[in-house]
Amino acid sequence: MSDCFVQLSSLNKLTIYGPQPSRGRAALCSFNVEGLHATDISTLLDQEGKLVSVEHMSAGLLLAVP
Image 1 (cartoon, one colour):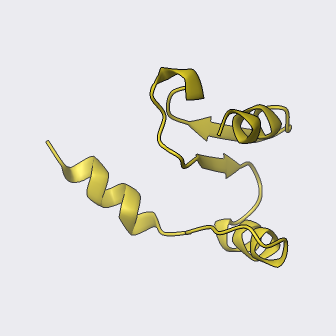
Image 2 (cartoon, rainbow, N blue to C red):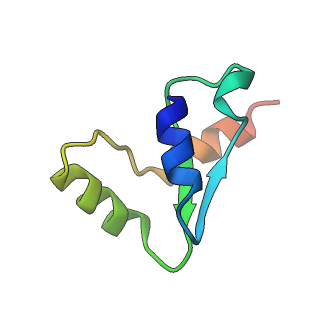
């Protein structure tokens, strides 16, 4: 996971959400690329064989938990 975090954090206009890998991060990574739609990013990653989930409902449900 730390390799993924390092590679993603080096990209311009990309924001990673959550703690760094050394601080108990799960084996997932939430991120946003400024100016690009999430479905466009997921299509490109899917074509590279990367498993991704693009669902705003997932984040909404997590934010609703007290």
